[in-house]
Length: 223
Image (spheres, rainbow, N blue to C red):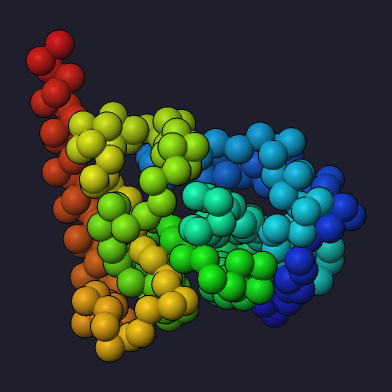
């Protein structure tokens, strides 16, 4: 059976009809992973689609295949590529990597001086980000925009984030700084070591998750 082909578009009003199925799949995917992302309504995603602040992938048969959108924080100082999702039947075709690349390019065009960041628990996404120039950073290097952090309230691990005073959680923070010189980036070695070592980072993420979840259970037993 031949692999399906895809076309990736910058969104416009003609794609509004996909908003509900996209947000439904975001919720189902987060539930399956046992983690969470900032919950978005179909109306919110529709607005991003209309503004052209998203990319959408369609199959050769016109089916929705994948999606990702842009959010600006701290008056545009920071940008996040959020809500990356691929329809279940189109996973394992390398589509996520193509979508991430396109939304990254779109972000650089719309916000050329902004730092682009992300939070993820997925080693595969970490690898994609690394190839785009992101490096792992501490949470303090991300935006301090309260609206962004309030979006974490829908995550099942929000209690962990709060207990760590927003300095750490199960997710790994990654950042692309367009104005930083590679030679001056303290995390450059970590970025280069990451390439090709997805299994190592996968084990690290699993260990981190295990430790934090044990801490969460211990805290609950005290009440």
